[in-house]
Amino acid sequence: MRPDASVVIAAFNAERSISRAIEGALAQDGASVEVIVVDDYSTDRTIEVARSFPAEQVRVVALEQNRGPGGARNAGLDAASGRWIAVLDSDDTMQAGRLMRMIGRAEAHSAQLAVDNLEVIQEATGAKEPMFEPALLESRPELNLTDLIASSLMFEETFSFGYMKPIFERRFVEHHGLRYDTNLRIGEDYIFLASALAKGGRCVVEPQAGYGYHVRAGSISRVLELGHVEAMLAADAAFTRRHRLDGETLAAQARRTRSLEQAASFLALVGHLKDRSPLKAFETALRDPIALRHLRMPIAARLSRLARPFRPRKAIGQIG
Image (cartoon, rainbow, N blue to C red):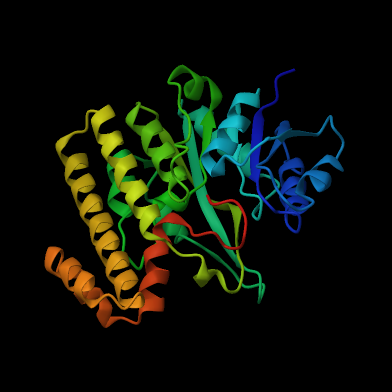
């Protein structure tokens, strides 16, 4: 019998957390699941840990070379057979009733996607809090493309809806040939969700937090690099070429593009200053004077804020 959901876990050097992720996926109440772990050519014991689970419960796909987060997830999509697809990062968890709630809400509203709130878990202290105010999500029964793009700006203090971990109807994914962008190391989740919405997918919102977003101490070191932002700009440009967007959505995209350009200028400026190349820093500042404004905040704090909308790597492992 076809399972209700396929839980795809892309993993790279995740031996310390992969068991916790798998156990959370297997412990779903009211929904039958298949768990697919895609080992992205790890150099630690990730694959051995994953294979320690019964083969009838956990299917392990071992890649022969590192494909990055998008390529690993695509291998999981290719292997999936469930009616719904859920993506779980290898260092995160999900609550037992999460998939049942999300599938039930989506099917009750004939939707092809569903998102829910996230519980942010500080591993150093054990502190937990919802990422989004429940009242905010309760007032927003559906997530549309314009709101997703408008929330996904750089240098913002609020969380982006791009943090959310949707479930997707597999039939919809296959019908539209949706796959992750393998050129992205950060932001691949965002562009996949945006593409699904642009294809006409209806996305309902479950206000209750069911996804455990684990944050490790020291994650500030895993921030955006200039190459990441340049790849996101290229992916966004390709996205706008592929899809016909209305005026409001185009305006939101223009704001997002400008924020990415500012981030690229800022990162280039910081790089030149660190390299003690004042002439190049001056040329960058002339091209984009706003980059200078961001230097008023301590660089470490600005870099940390830069990473917020796109979920930095919380430790050595899979970006998502």
